[in-house]
Image (tube, helix red, strand yellow):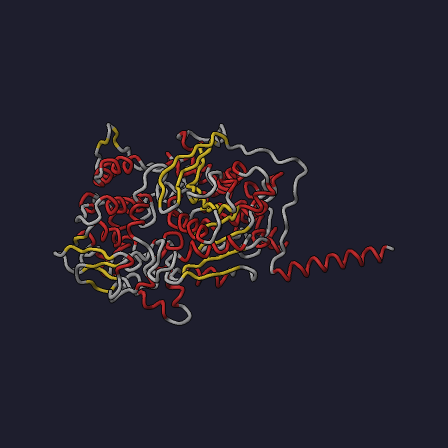
Amino acid sequence: MRNKLWAQRSVRLATAFAIAVGAGFAVDPVVGHADPEQASAATDRQEQVLETRDGVAVSYVSYLLPLPANAPAHPAACDRVGYLRYRAIDGPADSAGAEHVVIQEQGLGGGAVNSDSVGANTVRSARNMGQHIEFWALARRSSCLDETFGFDYALRSGDYLDAVDYYFNGKVLDGQRFPGFRTNDQLAILDWMGMERVVWDQFEVMRHEVPERAVRQQKYVCTGISLGGLVTGFFADWDFGAAGAGADQCAAFAAQDSMISSDPVMLQHIPVLRDIANALVTPTDAVLQAGLGAGVLPRTLGGIPAIGTEAFMIMRLAGLAAHLDPDAESRLLAHLPREFVIDATLNYLTAPTWTSFATNGADGSGSIRDFRFTNTAMLGMLIDNNSNNFSIEQQGAGALDGGPVMTKSFPNPGEVTELPLFGSFLRISAGNQQRVYPTDRTVLYTWRNYDEVRGVPFTTPNHEVADIRDAARQLATGSPGAYWETYFPNRLVIDIAAGYGGSRSGEMAPLRGRGLARTKPYFVAFAGDSPVQAGMATFFPAPSTAQVVSLPGYAHIDTIGAAAVQNDGQPDYSGQQLALFVRSLG
């Protein structure tokens, strides 16, 4: 009898192992709890209608979800969470009536309005396919600290210099003077906005709108762009108590130029490595958390050129100027002070050669301050894939016009990405497109929009996919939240590193699932001109059962920022492909 029992157990174990290996992952579902699921802690639902655009209603939905009583002092706005809601105007007014809801986590530093284009485009494409779905672009709680007052004022006055001078030159608006960007010691509340807070905020929003888990499992499509895909991987494997794992709240998962995983190198599938990693990484994580709490480590990106607080503020102000006065000669740079972070940002993003970069244009090439641009051309120089030197910030939004240009070679020419083997990995530095720089200091440089580039020698229509007017409008946003978060919490990045490194103790203890997103329908959209696919898809491939598509000619941000109609007359590929995937769920 004993031998028979052991044989039966062996067969069951062998069968389970074979199934796990066949799936490519040993997936451990989070064990359900006997206690009944509680109602959402979110209360006081408020919805502010923002606009109706091309058949899509856009609103901002928020809930009261207070931080713990022992949290550091913080604005009242930090006790609320919210999202931008996109729905067809002829669809159900109640989210529970939508056939599906796409709920999206944003990338590093991205505010909810980052996804304004893909949100509207996905809803519109789904409607054209006969479905009424919604798209929710989540706003991280840290957006409560966004600097928006100057933008709100300038949008009313119609003068972008009101905002520029408010933030950088001490101008008083409505009796208020900007006190300066917050310093590290003023941002202690960011220590409370790590992974645990982000995933619980998403869960509470989902549970508030759809209280029954069985319905959530059929309705929600959980997605993330860039870093948001990584966060969605943590959400999928997080244990939410009686409600089950995050994956139990979603019908499917979608990665937008990203991956969805809390364990990309599969440490959790090898017991010895799992235990060693937890033992090593958890104490290291505790030291880093203590450093944040003591204010020794930076709590936000702060003064880092190109990706820090002031750098993103410059891009937002350039968008505001292009939105309010697109064709006028730009006065933005003339009103920005000459200080290290600002000049280093402008120099890195726009320098044409290594010598020019090293001398800030004193080699004769001139800095960007030495040339004349319309406000739209100024914005294009800072964000376009034929101008900006940092691939992750690029969009294919048109081309510089109005004067002669030279080809850039800093930090490397776009053409080198065509080299075999290593070329595709060089995209991470400056992208794969040829980039240009002005050479005539007397002419006024102008801008051709994405659908006006035919005949331009350094680009082609199939690599220009974003409407610069949309980018300007989105960057110009003030309340309820900025396009780029003013104070992105570094705590979130540290938590991702801890989880990927194998920590499963302390705040990472609820991270109990192992690849649960892969047990559901899984969709991946890679931007064709982005460096992400070459790196991530090579080393961390999507499940063999995943639906993987490539968005031709799209840069990283284009995945969520493309125009509604492309140069071939087709709808935005990103929104259309996502809508097709959602439709396939039934």
